[in-house]
Image 1 (tube, rainbow, N blue to C red):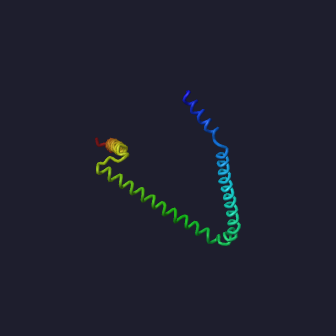
Image 2: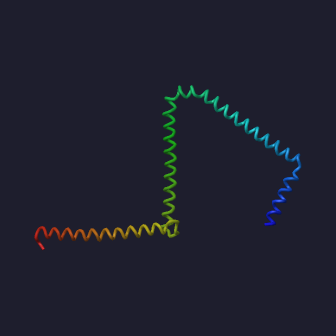
Image 3: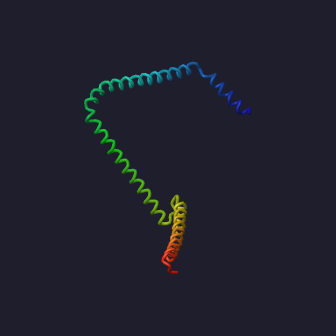
Amino acid sequence: MSDQRHRTDVTHIAHQTNPPARQAVKVATATTIGGTLLVLSGLTLTGTVLALIVATPIMVLFSPILVPAGIAVALITAGFLASGGFGAAAATALTWMYRYFSGKHPAGEDQVEYAGAKIADTARDVKEKAKEYGQYVQHKAQEVTGTA
């Protein structure tokens, strides 16, 4: 506890011993940077508004051409992005399958084996149910025809 109080006292003393000239330089630097950024922000806003004022009539005149072109560009871009994404997914899946079949134990192998075992159990159960149902239907057919 006294160690923390000592640190607080030391930082408090360090802040008190800052010479006024150093603080003045800090304030001047902060003011200069802040003012410059504020002026740049205003210039950017002004340029954006002027560009919008100039471009609006042009956009209205060319909108019958630009809108379908924009839609076409958006669809083409979406197609290329989807194609790239599907290609990356396929490459990842093929890499995972290669590792799995070569015995390198990729991530998720235990889940795949569990799912495979569960599917095999379900298939076995369905086969047994189908066999039982087939025997049931055969028995009912024999009862109906009278041949037992």
